[in-house]
Image (tube, rainbow, N blue to C red):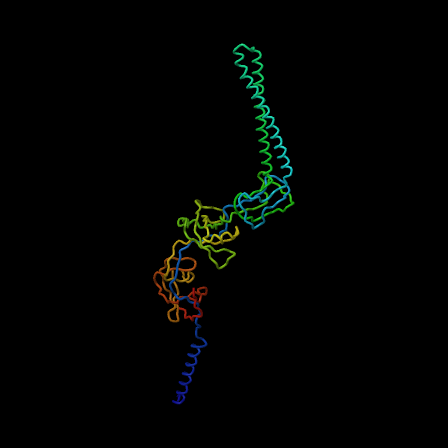
Amino acid sequence: MISSKGLKSILILLASVAAVTLTLRLTVFAPKKVPISVYIVKKGKVEETLTNSKSGTVMVRLRARLSPEIGGRVVFLGAREGEQVARGSVLLRLDNSDMKAALAVADTGLKLVQAGAREACVSNDLVKKEVDRNRPLHQKGMISDAVLDQIINRYEISQVHCETAKADVQRAKAEVGLALANLSKTELRAPFNGVITRITTEVGEWVSPSPPSVATTPVITLQDTNSIYVNAPMDETDSGRLQIGLPVRVSLAPYPGRFFYGKVVRVSPFVEDFEGQNRTVSVEAELTDKAFSKSLLPGTSADLEVILKVRENVLRIPTYALMEGDHVLRLNGSRLAARKAKVGLRNWEFVEILSGLNAGDKIAVSLDRPEVQEGAEVTVTETVFR
């Protein structure tokens, strides 16, 4: 039989073990709190937007790849890459000494036949006057029929000579025109105001025209910087909401972190269907800042957001904080509790909250870990401000 003293010792020992066990459970073996990042619900701007389904591109509406119509040696370049040129200005000239010589020959020939035509037609006028003088004499019987017939015959012959000479003048003028046309082919002129973006030849080099139906590298590339725009493909399911005049926000590969604004100027009237790709509708947008737009290089990658609706000063949360079924994890004391939110406008960045949350609520945004779940005991290590 255990004495009272022994029983007391056992009870003290058991109490000690229980205290140690409890201490270990509360310290060493206690579950650790999950560190999380939270966002404090507040008001701000939310937009409803449409984004391109694949990368858009900076393009130019007016672009010309120019080459001379004939071959020859380059003797003059009127501009360099990057220079602004006016419509009609000479961009390139080929050696035209033979063309100038041909023009001089044609011009001399024209002058000769013009002189011959004047002589033939003056002679014709003189013979006509002679006919006019002798007709009254013939009527009075002062000259015979034979004499009058000879005079009229000479008049008709001289008239043919005059007409032939005039035809020769027209032919000679055509030859001068042909020589001028051939001479003009030795010059390459700007078809519109623009900027030279590429030149593939130098003075002294020989250039050749493109054979029919054969594509060759153009000698000069000219583009109109006033016609820069952004083309982006949008999913066909969004085509019903796309309209000309809607505001857009553009991001460009050479300018990370910056946004540029403009508006929709064209929506394609048909759906493009390329094999292996989604069906899309092309949207064209022009930037508001025309001076900046002129500096963009065609072919630059661009992303386009069409802004459908904007709501200012509404309750919002980051889009990535919204879970399936429009639930969020709200911090309730030291634990996370799932809350159903009623949402309004949304985009890739923010979601409008119509009900279910209040300003000042803290919601978990570090949802990429499985331990961040409803009921988890957490500790806030970071507060996200956006």
